[in-house]
Image (spheres, rainbow, N blue to C red):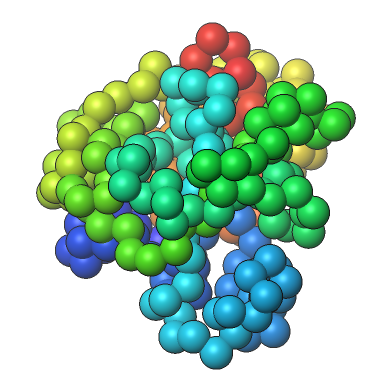
Length: 241
């Protein structure tokens, strides 16, 4: 994956775009007519976007109901951005993730989703977020007030590109997972993922920068890298994951 496909492209375009436009993402890549993402949106929004141009579709985030230092939904990445209050009036919410075809929905002024998320329902902690769908454009510096990066990106082109987004840049405590702990958690995502982590670890450690390098290397199937990230997000978060 080239550097220009994520944060550098965001900086160049000035707007956050959905998977229907970009074709990339850290979840399932099903954002096309007839695909799962298309079907879920058709169900949730009563077909409102079925014939709309792809650039008009909502973009996704999560409600930070727990005040997490590493973002509301680390399953999808080590960095996140915070939106201003002005977008709340055009944001809808659901729990659980739309992947699970939920029946519980809400809006900013009225919802009961936080209680459901807090209860968990036996879900893994990576799935306890309240999904948010923002309708209308999300613009850097106008709707996005801050981007929060993992410290493994300090001094890299990621930090440089983030500085061009037009919003504040800050840092969280950092994801970090030792190979020994990864091996101990082998049952979480499987031996193939552990073996990939062993190959790419730097001095015995995994960080988001290291996992990103694995993705860009082309040496591993995307699903393996994604599951390796899940291990780092689940067990390598600041404070113990």
